[in-house]
Amino acid sequence: MVVAARDAPGVEQGEALAELCRIYWRPVYLFVRQRGNSPQETEDLTQEFFYRLIDGEFLQGVQGPRLGRLRSFICVVLKRFLADDYHRRMAQKRGGGQVVVDIDGPSVEGQIMDVDRDGVEPERAFDRRWALDLLDEARRRLKEDYQLAGKAGLFEDLEPTISPQGERGGYSELAEKLGLTAGAVKVAVHRFRQRYRECLLSALRDTLAEGEDPEEELRYLLSLFSR
Image 1 (tube, one colour):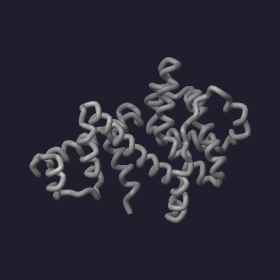
Image 2 (cartoon, helix red, strand yellow):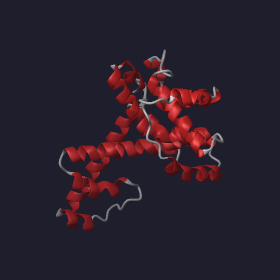
Image 3 (tube, rainbow, N blue to C red):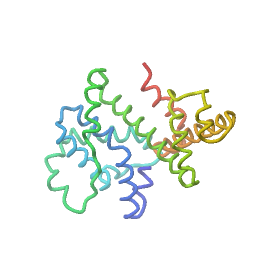
């Protein structure tokens, strides 16, 4: 994803990297916040980090086959960024006309206490937040698929079945709502979940170097939530 964005024409590159930032700013924010920075400092550092990513400073010399996992790459670069104390030059770099990442710090702040209480190290918390955002991205892609097919209403009806805690087996109410038999609903739910899994694997492939196994990455990300 990063290499393709870097090699794209100027406008396309900016759009691609801006999309990357939109999806993945939360793990970065959480990691920076856990390093003892205030909420305001964290927002500024997160903005500056992604500005430098979009600006291409962190991508110089990156080779695709050596890039590996995007989450690992960003985590390593983020550590270097914080160690170099870039915030001293923030005011000069964040001028008008630059890309601004839409950061909703308060939405992530509630996770800080949970992470501290559980004793989760910053790297693992980074990966957990990364996994949650990938799940959300897969859900967004699935919703878009159903909308393009003119089935936005069906997506809303079937969306609760994505969750492992979603109702399984008792489809009579849903069948009545959709005007289908229980058997037809089971088939629809199975296809819905299968398509969701395909969207998740597709989102994972975008974060891996060529030849890496998205199934293996999926198993790792899901293991982050096992007790």
